[in-house]
Length: 463
Image (cartoon, rainbow, N blue to C red):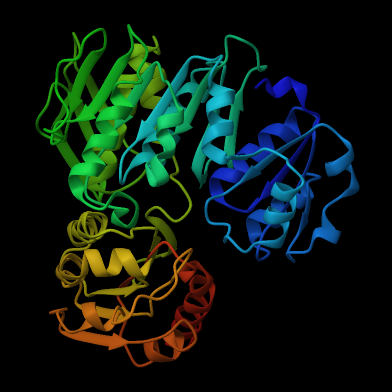
C-alpha cells in the first residue's frame, strides 16, 4: 500500500492523542482530512482551527461527501466500539480501514526511524529526543503521544520533509501496535506488567517487547533501561546500550538538585558531559534525559546542543505539569496511571517538597487495570498524606462485576482518605488545608484541573 495513492484521509477517533498527530501530518501534506470523535476537546478545537472537519455524532449522514468520492485512506482507533454505525457502514461498503499503528508503520517504512517504547516514560523520552533534534536543526518529524509544552503540539517537525527526514515515533505496546514498526533506533524505558486485559500475564508483555527488539534493523541501536533484565544486553547485528540513574553503561554522577530540578554529569561516553541542567523535575526525567542523550549522540548531535535542549525542555502536558507554583501552594497535574508511575511521581514530589503535606487526587483508569494492580495502587497512593479517590474511568471497557475504587480505598494507609466523584471533588477539597496537591490519572480527571485551580486561587485571595 502506497500513501501517495490517496488524497483524502478519514479518521474514526480523530481526537485521540496518537490519531490527532497523524491527522495533522496528512493535513500538512495538503490532503483533505476529516473525522469523527465522541466528544469535543481542546485538542479537537485545535484541529478544527487547522482546517480539519470534525463531527461528534455517530451518524453516516455526517461523513463529508469527499470521503466517498475521493481516494480515501480510512483510519480507526481500537477504542471505537464494535457497534459503531460509521465504522460498520464503511466496513460494509468494502473499504479497508487501517489501525493508527498500521498507518504509522507505512509512514516510517521509507524513513530512518527512532521508536520509543515502554510501559511508562515513552512520551517524555520521545519528546526529549524530538526537542534535542529540533534545537540541533536535524531534519525530522515526530509523532508524539502527548502535547509538548515547548511547541503546544503532538506533531513536531524540523526542515522540509524528504527521504532524509528522520521519524521519531512513540511505539505503543497497547494491542501490540508497536509490532508494526521496524526502527533503526529503539528505546525501551520499562516493561512493567500493564494492559493485562490484552496480554493476560507479564510474560506475554515481555515477549511482545522482545519481539519488538527483533524488528530493529541490522546495524541499528537498542537503548534500554538497565533494570530490564528479560531483554538481552547482546543482540546479533544490533548494538545495545544500557542506561539508568546510577547503573548501566550510561548513568548520572555529581547530581545536585534545587527545588527538584537536577544538574548532573553524564558518564559513559569517551568524555563526560558535564553540568547538564534539566528543565523538568523528577528523578524519572533524569533517566529519560539520559536515554534521549544516547540517541542524540548516536545521531551525531554535539554536546552543546544537547545541553541547551535539555535545559530548555519545558515538558509535556499532563506530565508533571505545574498548574500553580508559588511559595504557599503547589498544584501539579500528572498522567500517571500505573502503580510504578505513581510511586515515582510521589517520591519525586516528596523529595522536592520535604516537610510539606501532599494531597493526591486519583482517578483509576480501566476496570481491568484496577483489578490487576489493586494492591499496588493502594500501596503507591499511601505515600501521600491525603488521598481523594475518584470512581474508575472506564475508557473502552464495560464494568467488571465486583471491581470498583473501593478495592483500593480499603487498603490505602494515608492519614486522610476520602471517596469522591468527578462532580463533588471540589466540594470535598474545600475543607482541606492544601500545601502540595496533585491530580493523577489518565482518564478525564483533567477536566477537574481548572475547577480545582479556581477553588485554590479563590481561597488564596480570601486568606
